[in-house]
Amino acid sequence: MRCEICGKKIIGQPTKTKIESSVMNTCKECSKFGKVQREPPKPQGQFRKTSPRPIRKFRSKKPSYEVIEDYNKVIRESREKRGWSREKLAEKIYEKVSVINRIESGRMIPDMKLSRKLEKMLDIHILEKTDETIDEEVSSRDVREATIGDIARIKRN
Image (cartoon, rainbow, N blue to C red; front, side, top):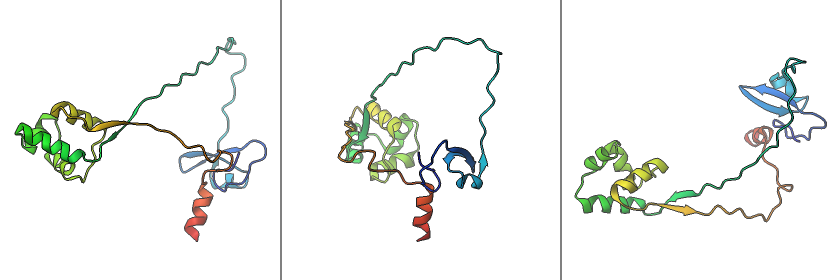
């Protein structure tokens, strides 16, 4: 395990340190930058022991969606085909007119909730499923994440 501040490899147990309301695993040297967190004492004899239950792990893949590229044109054309003004559409989906203006001009990408409202009200499809495939060309052991210490060195240079 590596220190989340300096990135050095920690030998033995890391020290849990609270630094500006974040608890981090740090080495002994970096633990001086915050308050060392202690484990709460374990209750002795107060509770009866129960047999360990098997842990069930469920993996569920939720499909991810992305707004199509020309969403603003699709929304505007559908609204105009119905003969609605931007104000009328905004009123129907309980949004501000300025939001509709920004969406139709392409300055704002609607979030999932707003996209679903627009799809339902205008009978259009602006969300598409995306496949989240991860290319595993580099093994996870070869790459380590940046630490706060790395970022501090980058800013200093």
